[in-house]
Length: 171
Image (cartoon, rainbow, N blue to C red; front, side, top):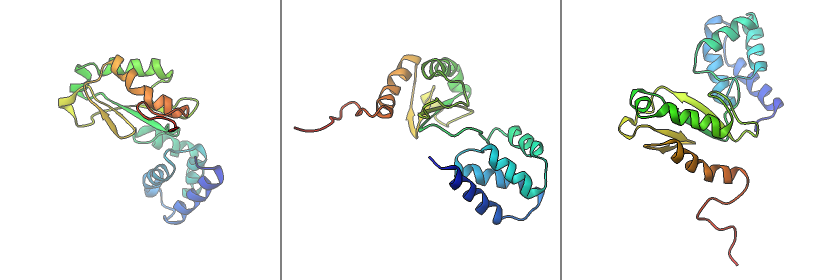
């Protein structure tokens, strides 16, 4: 995890590579999110100061676009496809099951920082609907029960336990 000092240094480097023009607001927000993984409040305050804009205006732009997030992603970022095919095949049920299982809502990260949940418009695997992606791994034809099973290795790894099928040590 990045420290506050490292984040401040990263933000300063980003700001120094741009001109102080309002037209640079969205590129600055995008670059900060790319480097830090999200938009911390401090970053938006520093961008506002750099551009000579009110912080509320920067916040308004950032919250208008759904590409920006304001909390760090979890170690295991989960994306649930809600495109037409996935929605019709039960995507909403999977999303609800994940919210219950992880005790978070869409756009949130678990308190331990291990899991974050995102609803996406389309993953591009319509023939495999409904689809869920966990940390770059695609899970096709999911059901709420299969989703709970798929989370087991990630939960074990997060707790420091070996993944299924791997032994801790050989004697």
